[in-house]
Length: 228
Image (cartoon, rainbow, N blue to C red; front, side, top):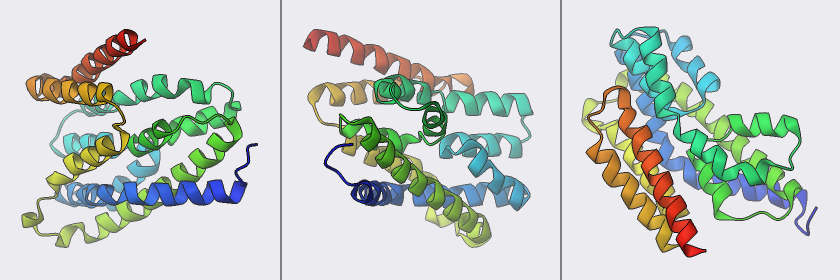
């Protein structure tokens, strides 16, 4: 253990998580709108929160099921949307390498976009410090997502369409991008991903997201090799 105390790391994890959760609030209410709009039973809709714990994949799954898509098609699309988490795992693998097995399982479950941003900002030298911080921040995200998706389902029927909650996803990811950019290579990769995602947006089953992520990954690897 480093000079950081356990309580200070727990508090740091909680206070780091809360600001990044704020842009996800409209996402939680959007889930409520989707559940009520498509007539999905409230408890069933909310149960997707602890099972999936990934807003974009969760909304994709419920939206496609509500539109009458087959279970296989809806699940496949949700998996494609969530495939970016595989890239997150590759990036954070060194931080997880010396961790106990139980944490590698639990940590993977908590690895949402915000957690990846937080875990990537600082290179942790002490594995115990990283584990305490990660679990504190991840548990905060988890508790808040469970709470606010439940609230979103309750208030979803009374949310006016004029609110335009579709802006939630772009705002969320722009916020995460602003936090994680620390050098020009990161900015270049982000711009490549953005252009590729727009150019490939018409691919079926949202394959454009996965393709853009893979293109950005290759660009990032190339820039990292050139930097060295």
